[in-house]
Length: 399
Figure 1: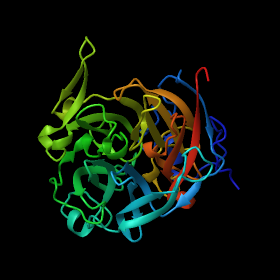
Figure 2 (figure 1 turned 90 degrees about the vertical axis):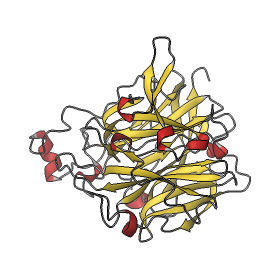
Figure 3 (figure 1 turned 60 degrees about the vertical axis):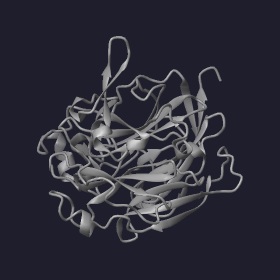
């Protein structure tokens, strides 16, 4: 049986050679050679702040489904959404903590995961009219945030790939729905359905603590996974973009601005035109739908990234010919002192999880007081197709 822990900082690949015909043919060029120019080797420098990582011995599983964007609401609970389970393309959950948990324990930080709403968005109504969307399952969770007691839920229309040469789950458009009763009911027309499109189709809110209390200013921030072809994908994209909006205008598209670089003086530039957005993070063909969380004790942002490859670090999407191409995936963890970077790599695992793990994140609620012990939430294929948690402890320079 495969060891489920992440004991080594970089694990060697130990899978059997894969046999998918199209994936093998990448080397011969019959699949268009789209990924041949790239390798699963992150270009970011090693962190000078975090020198090593110690993973908890155990991984814990609960509920069912995948992706799990999470937020810490003003009632003290975590809330999240999962895709493709319980006969639904997307549903909504409450995560209740274990009483008295210190978040540095070897035991899981939660007591239970409860299903709140099994069908917040009905695909029969919200998928049929979107060109290219999967008509039965073409709505998925993207990002979630609690602000002043209101849950803002970014959802996306998608399909399971439309480019056979490098077939990725394609995010077509996104919009925001809202709830004032912790997900029991939703205002589905809070924004128009094409609120976000193109390379900003998928919005993932930056997490700043309970009810967004640790936000540095009056804005809500979100990262957007994007690709060099001008689109957005769930897996194996190229980069992340950054957007922001005043907290009291989240539902106004004209109020959103996108990070457009810096002036020579260092002052940030923001523009309402998404076409002018510049990358805050780049890992060609290996950038996922990533979540970013602020760690207030360490005064750093943590970005958890995933990408799929063929076992030889040649990028190969999960949806190239799933389920055969679901494994393996690579986990890369980064830290930065500012959202716009630069980002530094502090952990890499080329064989992440039991089989093709993805969508990792670090809920701020489950960070120790000194910020050095955190819990990672993820999901994966087969045995890991659920709410997966594992602790990790950071060893910092000079410790």
